[in-house]
Length: 298
Image 1 (tube, rainbow, N blue to C red):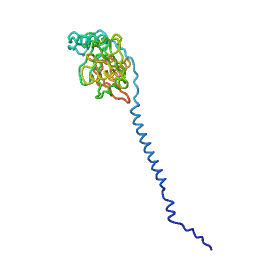
Image 2 (cartoon, rainbow, N blue to C red; image 1 turned 30 degrees about the vertical axis):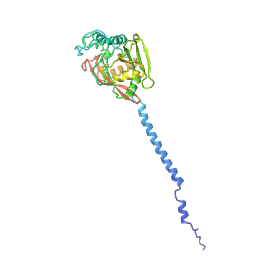
Image 3 (cartoon, helix red, strand yellow; image 1 turned 90 degrees about the vertical axis):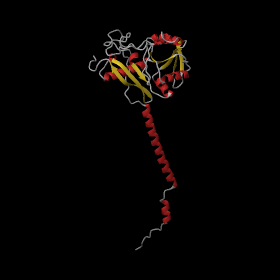
Image 4 (cartoon, rainbow, N blue to C red; image 1 turned 90 degrees about the horizontal axis):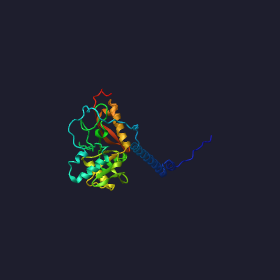
C-alpha cells in the first residue's frame, strides 16, 4: 500500500506569514486614534451644547396692569422721614450741579425707579420714594406700590465686559443727563460695537434706574465713555425697555403667586439678582416682602 508523504514545510516561512505586518499596525493605530478624537470632539460638543441651549421652560411675558392712586396709608409700610428725591435736592445742592438735577427731573420725573447696587443700601428717584404718608405712593389695600419704589436689582460682576453683556442681553441703554447739555446722551450695544445717540428729555418715557454708589457706577461711566458719551458732572441712568420691564414684573408676580399673593398690590419690596442662564442671563428673585400677612390676601 502506497503512503502519501506530506510535503516538507519551511517553519521560518510559516512564522513569517503569520506575523502582523507594519501596515496592519499603523492602520490599527490610526483607527484607534480616529475613534478617540471622535469621542473627544463629541464630548466637547455636548458640553458646548449645554451652555448654549436653555432647557428651562420659557416663561410667558405678560403686561401686568397695576393701579396707583390715593387711598389709605399703606399698612405696615414705612412711615419714617425719607431722604429727598431729586426735585427736593435741587434746593439744597451746590449751584454747580443745579443744571444737572433740573435736566434729570425733566427727563424722567414720571417714570422714576429706585436702584440699589450690590454693595450699597442707598437708593435714588426723582420723585422721592413715596413711602408712608409721603405723596401718592398707593394705598395699603387697593393700590400697588409703584414698581420704581418696590424694585431693587443687583448686578454682580467684577469684569466690565461681563457687565456689558448683561446690559445688552436685556437691551438696557445707559444715559447721561445734565452737565449743561440740553439733550440726554445714550449709549448701547456695549459688548460688540458701542453706539451713541441723543434725544430730547421730553421724549423719554421709559422706566429708569440710577446708582448711588459702588463700583458698578464707575463701570457705567466707563461704558458710556467707550461709546463716546461725556459723563463729566452728569447723572448716569439705566433705561429699561418695556419688554424688560414686563419680564421683571412677570417674574415678580410668579414668585409672589407661589407664596399665596396673586396681585402686585400685596408686594412691598422685591429684590432681584442677575444670573447666568445658558448663553444669556436671567432675573431671579432673591427676596420678597409683603404688605399683607399670609392667608389674608384677597
